[in-house]
Length: 368
Image 1: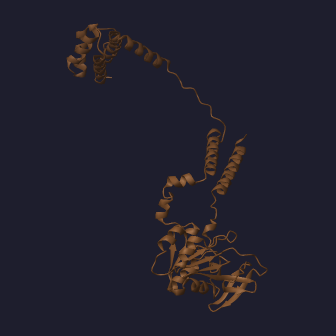
Image 2: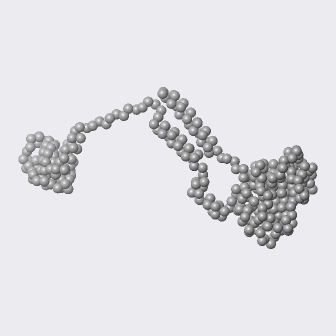
Image 3: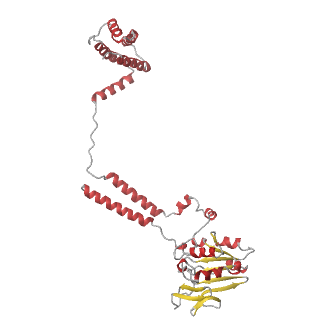
């Protein structure tokens, strides 16, 4: 495969890898956010939440389980209204259970938007006149019963009310009664505001239903630490990404662009290798006298030649006199060298290293 073909293959694999990565890691829309007062999407309730703030009727957000709300707000001196908005029109929130009925019976109000009801032959989008203005509804579901109807047409009730002892439950077939999509419709926001703000109740909205949780709840449910988060993260997509990335890196390392380079074998210095091997043998044999003799002869030849005495060994006095005269150094330096060389007895390794150091020092003072 030539260089151009390899580049094409590499670019193709990189593009496919990037596409797979984007597909696997693409964020999945969370349907639970639909109906949340934190959401600014058309099916969210952020606009209605801001409207209530402007009207002087603040809405408080509940971010704990519903059971905690019923327990903590069950004996409040002031009546409370809890708004619960379904996040999925095809999987409506359940009807009132026994715990909720008990809480409502104490004088509280439960408003549930998006409860189940039969599909009728009504038009999907209809407009209804109310004292608060025209209310637009987008659903064909209607409720038919003896309950008190708050918004209805000939096909049945869209919003109705049930009284339970001192409190009441208000239900609607649509979860989009005051969604952001209807912020320009005159009656939708005021109509829901009137439903939740009657009798001067404290108004709460269930955001736990939409996946929002406060720090205390997150800690209790074990989702506060990164370790818990990782254990709840899908493992297969993550492993697939890691394997694919390792495969690409392996391919890139083993199949670089261009022709393979031939590695030249290292040049072996036979003389240096011989010297290193001989030194190892002499060290194991502790033959320091042989080292002193051989090195001493060679160094004496070098010194004599530098002092103009030739290469034939001369008497120690002659060498000492020439050393002092030509280098100006003490005679003791050359005499210690000659005495050690002629001593013919083993030296310890520290003494041998010391002698070699002195030999090197002699070289530095020679008149080369």
